[in-house]
Image (cartoon, rainbow, N blue to C red; front, side, top):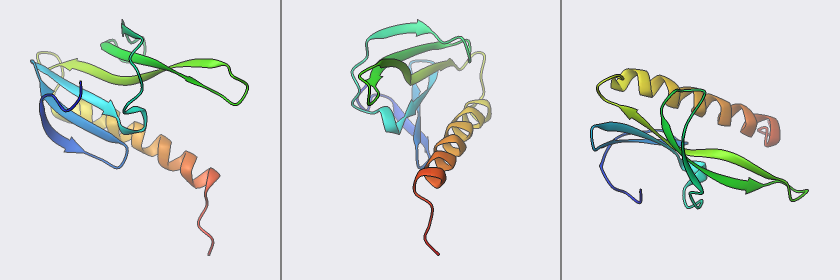
Length: 102
């Protein structure tokens, strides 16, 4: 997508764009990851771009990069709720792996 559309909201780990009658939710941690497929995301029921990341064992895992929420079916607050769930998940992972030393 490369900065197409108007940025309307951002968090520490996500961007939400207004683009072609869709709200596009982009995972910041997956920016720059090559899109390997455009599919219907089973969790959210919307079209999504997916790529592949490899773990330390070389095993590839398909991951969502961005999701296209049709504005005819979704309000910005609904997309923001999904984005905030992503945000909370990454913050929890960060806390487990890099806790503050106090």
